[in-house]
Each structure stands twice: as C-alpha cells, then as structure tokens.
Length: 485
Ligand code: SF4
Image 1 (cartoon, helix red, strand yellow):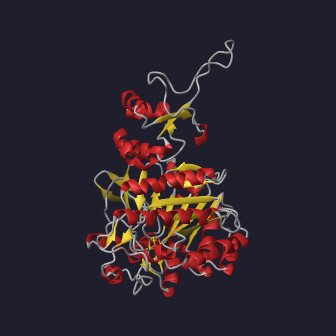
Image 2 (cartoon, helix red, strand yellow):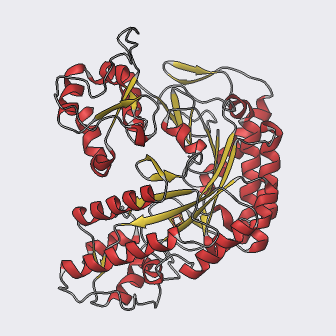
Image 3 (tube, protein in one colour):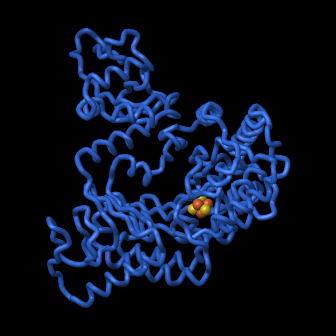
C-alpha cells in the first residue's frame, strides 16, 4: 500500500489546517525529483507493503500537478509495483478536471477518482473558499464518467454554519489575509444572501443550513451519469490554524449546534441507505462492491508506505512521518541520499542509547530524533498504543471487531455494560450492516443472536460474532470509544 502526498493547493479552504503549500508551476519539477529520490531510497520498504498493491495519491491537491509530473511519478512507482494496482485512487479538485484531464487520468491507470466537491451550493462553496462552482463540479463529474470512470467518490461537508452579517465580507478577507492563507476566492466576495444579522436567530441559521444540505443530497443523488459509487461526508470542524478558527474567535462565524449537525448526519445516513449505499465507516458510504480498498486497509491496521512531505508510514509496529515542510523534506531526502552514497556501504551507526541502525537509509526503531540521516521522526508503538488504535479504528467501521478480541482488550464487564446500554451491538461477524441481527437483546443477560441449531438433531455450532457501535450512535462514536478505552 502506497500513499503519496502532493503538498500543493492553488487556494486554501477556510476550514483547512492541513499542511499545504501554495502551488507554483516551477515547484513541480523539484518536487518530482525529490520524490523520485525518496522512492529510490525506500524501494525495499515499498516492496514489503505490496501484499496489498494499492496506490493513493492524495494531498493537498494532486490534480494541480501537470500530466508530465504525474507520469514520471507513476512510471517510477510502477517499476517496483508492476503498475497493476488493485486500486489506484487519485484526489482531484473539480476545477482541474476537463475532458482532456479525465482522459489523461484514465490513461495513467487511475482506477478510482476522489473528487472534493464539498457542496453543490455556490454560496457555501464561496464561504469555504473552494475554487470551483456547483455547476463546475457537475461538469467535471460528467467528464469523468465520459472518460470511462466507473468508480468515483465525492466528498461532501455537512454541519456548515453561518456568517454573521457584521462586516462579513471584510472579515473573511481579513481572516484569510492574517493567516497568510491567500484565500483568493474569498477576497471581496461577500457571502451574498447568506450572512445573518448580528443577533440572527439560531433557528434561521439552522433552517438555511438544513435546506442547503437537503439540496446537496438531492443533487448528489440525481447527478447525470448516475450517483457516485462512493461518498465521503465529513462534519465541518473548526480546526486551530484555519481561517475559520479566526472567524469564530472574532465572532464572525456562527457554528451549527451539535444537535443540528447530528440531524444532518442522520439525514445523510437515511438518504444514502434509501439510495442503496452501504454505510461501512463513520464517514464513508459505498454502493455494493465499491468500498475503498486502500482506506479500508488502514482501518484494519495494514502496513503502508507514505511518500512525500508530511506523509506517514506504518510497518505493523513502527510509525514514521516525513517533515511537514517541502523544503525540509527535500533537504532530508537529498542529505540522506548523499550520505548513503558517500559511505558506499552499510555501517552501524549509533543513533540512541538503546538502538543501532545498520545504515543511514534506515530509521531508528525507538523514539529518537538523532540525526543519522533518517528521513523522518518515528516511534515504535507500545502495546497500549496498539490496543488503543485497534479499538479506535475497528469501531469506526460497520464490521466492528471480533467479540472475543474486544473482550480480551476491554474486559467482559465493560463490554457487557455497554451492550446493555445500547452503546454497542452484537452482529454476525463480517456481516453487512443490514444483517445486524438485533439492536438490543430483549433480556440483557441473553445474547442478542440465537445460537440454537436449525433442527434439534443438529449440534449447535457456535457462531462467530463481532461487536460494533450501532449506526445511530456513530455521531457520538468518539465518546463511546473513549468509554471503552
Ligand atoms: S482542504 Fe482545501 S486547502 Fe486544505 S489541502 Fe484540501 S484543497 Fe488544500
């Protein structure tokens, strides 16, 4: 499994706090050169994760890269991977997708396109500083379909709040400017017809947000060429470091209440279930057979290699992360490469009191930041960290976790208590959510699922069960997981 991070965006969304650099065409070439160096240096590591041969190019905005840059990257990787991916996903911004670009992606071998639409409401798109329009997003979607893509995922954002009218236009531009975010789409753009007067009623904000979300779902499900195979929907969150955070601090943006966000989430679950989607992870919905293979493997704890600035990697016990700076990442890639070339052979280097690394291309297996030419910081997960991750990741999914494993990790008493309280439910292992056999046992002392044989003559065969958080509680899933931990 390979994740490749493209750390560039043309403009910056108001809600974003991810690391990303403003894209300049002249940066593409040096970025690709450094990436090819990194790919070369981590060849063995990449080969070791190919039990699942998937490639995910994410960002940032990978679609800002010119086709020639993407071709060089794909060619370098295909020498190691064979180029026949079980899934090859690329994230795109609708504004970058033309008929030609869609045809190019197909030619490149992309099998799945993930497009950040976020909303089909132009006023909402402006407020979020997205650089595309609703009409543009639909046009790009059609272009992808016409290029032959039959596995498209669209991202949406729910729980969008409201601008407060008082100097709203100036406030947005000021916030973007003060954060040096260069939110071009925002400057001088008042969120027309959307900003509420200073003390506007919560009810009005709520009604607007609800109506816009309803329209978003209506458009999503009636897209020309048929609805997408996959939908990822995230709640708008106010992250420190984002332009939106500044606006909230200054009282210029009104967040939606948790209750209103939950209503929108439940509406999303209901509408997509009616349309035949499987809700297989808290934020992800797929038509049968279209779950994201790459992302599903993350949630099951599979190893992966992350390439590029800020990319994380995991080998089953160690996690490592590249510098979240284009410059520092490139420096490290080149200095490490030079160091390996200079020494010409593997030699042990002491990097911390308890660990030796055999050559500069390897990383310290402990939590040490000693400069031995390592590419990144790293940590070896403790047993407790592994337990926490296993519970957190599996509880995000509709498949949950095998009951016997959860009982070992959390204890019988805790699991029983949460089953009785309806915060967890027992299902047939590996089943589709629709196969949930019972939401709640009639008698809490009894298992929810009958284990009686079909006929009295047949011996009872114990059925494997899994435990998960019921879908109706996923909105408060984090609190339930905290309780479990
Ligand atoms: S959320 Fe917006 S600004 Fe942030 S990485 Fe994605 S496209 Fe770029």
